[in-house]
Image 1 (spheres, helix red, strand yellow):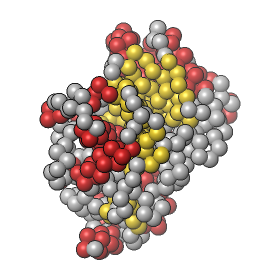
Image 2 (cartoon, one colour):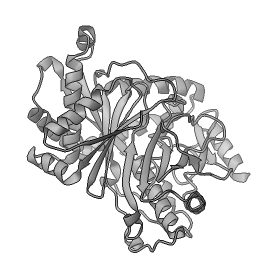
Image 3 (cartoon, one colour):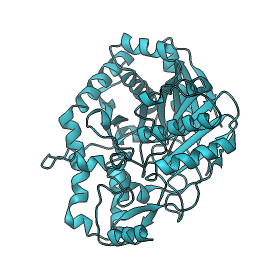
Amino acid sequence: MAERNTNIHRSRTGFRDEDGPWYALDNAGIIMPAVSNSVSTSLFRISAGLDEPVNLAALQEALDRCVRRFPYFVVELRRGFFWYYLEPHEARLRVQADAVSPSQDFNINRRGTCLFRVRARGSRIACEFSHALSDGTGGLRFLKNLLVEYFRIRGVPVRGAAEDPDLYDLDAGPDAREYEDAYNRHFTAGYPSPPPLPRAFHLVSPQLPRGSYRVTCGVVPLAAALAAARGYGASLTELLAAVFLDALQDLWLAAPAGLRRRRPRLAVEVPVNMRKFYPTATNRNFSLFVLVTQDMRLGKRDFAEIVSRAHHQLRFETDARTIAQQISRNVAGARKLAVRLVPLVVKDFFAKLLFSALGEDLLSGFVSNLGPVALPEGPAEHVERFDFLPAPSVFNKTSASVVSWGGSLYINFGSLARSREMERLYFTRLRSLGLPVRIECNL
């Protein structure tokens, strides 16, 4: 009760906390309550496919153990006068049945809703996290701990867990460094804001029926994908972003002339894990985004040129000072006293405008590469695959998330669009590069 009263007091006074696990949302999560609903849920998803059906009793026991170690995830959203804030979710978190359409029928603004959930069906265990709470790295760390504990309970010997920094002692209390607001800690005052960007082209398509979220997964041999990227002098992420941009180019050329005139700019967003640049153990959000762009008024480009441009743009945008400039712009506004004293109802109104003007309206879609997943011996032998799925967006209807495991690359498109053209063009281009692609789809 004392914690709850403290939360309410601090939300009313505009207090900002950088140490405790409950109070203010971090700089990336702070906008999510204003722009999330039961369709654009803000839920990204990481799942594991096992070699046998999930034992629900063992999974529930593992979840009960994990949530005690990750209390900063077991929170719900509350609304104060000046700020949203987080307080502990008191009800027991239970494993839920999975659904055909993931990341739907969930609203973080609904009273009593924990900001993540664990789901299971058949041989699949899935964690769905709101971006108000964490990013892909934090979500993956939780899932890895959940899986290792699940297999321990199932009697599987676990070897090498101590060597993996993502795996925690579940009997220990949480480390305060795991829930720090790393954006605020690494904020540099005095940097100028990045220059404004023009609006980007968006996929033209009617929306799927409410509650439907199409997942199209392409499974590609990892070694072959890496070899293809090396052949173009690019990283795997750069190649995957270039393929997305190439597909956008074809979609733009097929779009109505009026739309082409109004929106000649293509832009693919690539999330960057900031933990690679700044020392932090945080499991909260700590990602920024860079753009790979193309101005179609300059004419169509061939694929090799697109890959080259993606390679150089991403290297340029991930320069340490350019990254610091983004952090400075994003954090500085919330630190201003005039902003802190604006009532939340007014903040919500402007948050929606800013999310469009400085966020989704500037990009055509995104490709997020979580990278390779590692598990200790024992559990690793019982996991057949991992999947990573982007949060649904009504504005940018189709995007992709990527993860690799066991020699395979899993490219998952999440889409609210009836059109499948983006996915078709993307995987057709991969096949033109000589990569075998196995396609799976839920709808």
